[in-house]
Image (tube, rainbow, N blue to C red; front, side, top):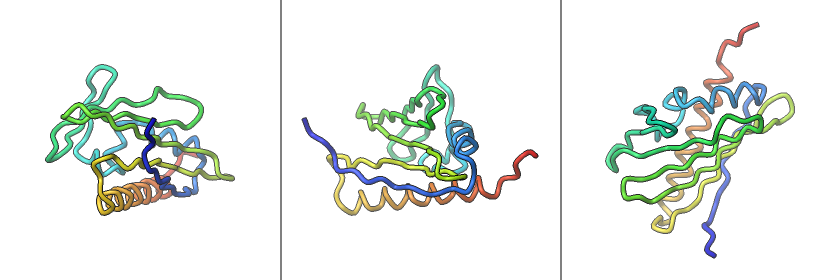
Length: 138
């Protein structure tokens, strides 16, 4: 059995974890903060189709809504490869910790892995800013 090198990229967010989960888990909100989905998602049965830019459309399937903060999703690339993405929102005091486990794919060199990690970090920064700046109902 082969395992892939992995890195957990995370951000603390100063909002209740349930608020963060409710926003982040909604596919319609993802283009607002997840740069890889910036061109939007279109529903296709249980899946979502995302414009993958130069690589073409990708198929995304999200974990069902749950009480545990799990936003895991599989991405099926145009060539049929499947990439598993683990995304979690957990309580951190009165706030939340959002964690994305980035797996280095077999065809990735060091530079590509570092670039992916940097993109994930920017996405989580964007998510944190969006949610922390959001007006919440009283």
